[in-house]
Amino acid sequence: MTKVCITICTAGRPRMLADCLHSVADQEPPEDCSVTLVVIDNNPTPQVGEIVRDATADARFPVALVHEAEPGIPHARNRGLIEALARGADWIVCIDDDEIADAGWLKNLIAAGETHQADVVQGKLVKIYPDRLPLFVMPTNYPDRNEGQPLDVAYTHNVAFRSWLVAPDRGNLRFDEGLRFTGGSDSHFFRRARKIGAKIVATDKSVVRETQVPERLSLKWQLRREYRVGAGMARSETTLGVPRRQRRRKPGQLVFRIVRMIVTIILSPLMLVFGFERFEATVAAAIRKLAASLGALSAHLGRLPTPYRKLDGH
Image: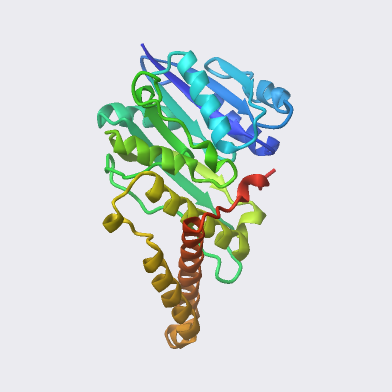
């Protein structure tokens, strides 16, 4: 029988965690699979015991709660790997604590992995936005993908991967704890997985939904996120040993891109002749690319942002 271990890392989001747990606990186990849910409490002192017990009282599979006192997302994720291996997992599944899983989420995720003989399966994330957004703030949902479409990278917001990737005698991968508060340890992990031969595919049949909290609806938050992503991507290119000629974030390229985006922003009022929406979209895209390029350049200078010292949500 195939063993599946779901891991949820949580810190400072008790209400979101409760909603997430309800949706996960209600999942029907895939056929011929035994399922275990492990919740990693990454608060300084244990805080979510009662929430986990209440939300998973009627779960269709065993639930375990562990405390990881060392702060930081990669530390919590690595504790999840240890717990999954200790339970003999064949598949390790990750979902973020601020997401809600659709019915059939788990079955569809594992089925896609088996059908496409994949090592990593990236499910679909749907971000839910209010009808009206602040000026220059744009939705950032991922585009639709073909079933089984090969991917270069994956993220832990909705993913399943085979345990050989982290088994000590095989892949032995871990999340980079040097990115404790920077973010991007998941994308870096899966780029390394692909480098050692993992097959990564997409499925849009396995869906999680993420309601955007007010903190994420400001232009400042979006630009900080792009800055952080840019820094993480540049660091990954360096640490993964990507040949220099293949790198997309070389310092010279970044400076050119920064200048180009500044010029685009300065000239953007000319787009008003095509309508305000076209103008807004042009500026929004340019300032996001500018922030990402500045973040990447900062990584080359040895400076990484630390946005995850304080988590948003509730």
